[in-house]
Length: 601
Image (tube, rainbow, N blue to C red; front, side, top):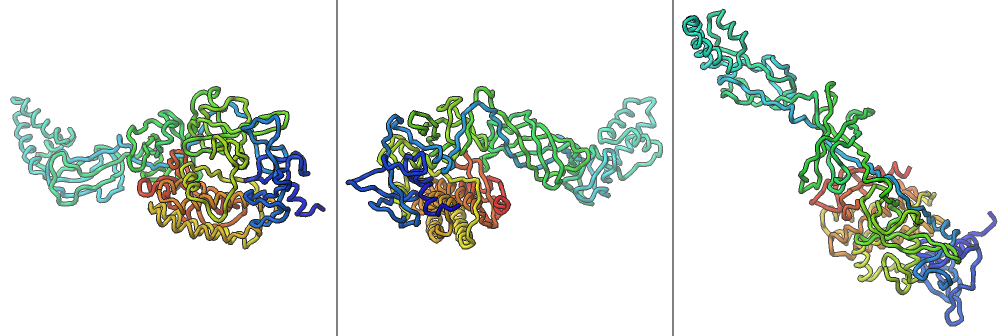
């Protein structure tokens, strides 16, 4: 193209009328600036920066912060537009990456991922006891894990009581004709000690007492516990071995408290075993534990699986998926998560409206239902057929804040904000952001080639992020605050001039969220509020690394219980789960979602 970089930037920012992220509230419909709406104060045109609207000058020039060309500040007094709405031109929407979608009834389907373990079926665990007292003279089973077959000899006992009973049998046998009842009683006594009819007849036929008797296995299975040794004296009914029949096993899955409404008895589940790659197993949930573990906040969902080939062994790890559906399709409205801006108490979306002056967006508060993973169920606030912004909502909200229109931070509207103060923010603003968790992460599907020096600086930001996260794992808010200062310094060292054009615009959006969330942790003395700010910090850092193709050796991990059961991610340099949102309360709650290098490549 023959258009200079300077001219191209002017075209873009004039169309957005103030930038993509914190751009001004109104946008021109053509590539030329419409000076009929340019703000004039004391007869002079006001110039501002598209990325730093706090910059106000009475002459054109370069932004003292990022070096971008200043543009005329446009007035926001269009007629025929809802005074509570913010207008945008179609071109501005495209450049700001604003995407809309029509709200409709969809299948409320959620894929729930569960982790679990293979365990013995408790109904097939048996205690092998001895049925007569004596001393163990021989053990046929000498170690745990050995397989025994029902009816096989597993031990031999010397029993003085059995010797006496045999002598009584011999005497009763001699008078069996005259005293049949006595003879039957002598036989029954031996049968009560689990001697078989064949053994009793053999004793009678030999006419000699036996001083050792075999103990026969009552069930087939694997010995899981060996409780006696050679030479031990045992009483009648004492347990010799614990035996588990593994022809049928249980797979016990952990179900988080937040997912309980989606899991029901009878649901189908498909799962894999980590040590059996390439094989997929299916089953149905036949039992859900009614009691929740008070420490981990999970309960158990049980799946019974046939295991005739003995492939499944106790303590194997399993990972499964349940595709759960809630309610009737025609009654449920769903929207993508990216469409919702939420504060923990309030959730808002931006509804697209049309007028004679063009299209504009108006904030609407909604009531959220259960999370569907990448979408929310809308309980109240939207109707089928309405069109909402599903991407770029933060850009719209930022423009509304600047224009004094109702926004997430100011529901009633008010004076225009002056944008980010990159030297820091005041304590009142910090506390408000903490309490509301209002930061909207800047996601962007496109990736950019960037200067190697820029990538190294982002790698340093990741390295400085880790101690902040570790301090929150330890529930140490003071250390987290101190480490956040180091993270701030690493962020400040990122040279924004190393990225140009659209990449520069995207980095400026990312930078806002990184600085806000880091500053929030630095100034926060309340542990839970500091943890709230870790969520947007972690998400934005992940998307920045991905966007600018920065390779780091680490993992993205997720806990569905964090952020009031909304779920939250964090980054780690280890695949071991150590939860920064709960610390010792639920230290291992979560799972690894992806390897950072794999997500970038």
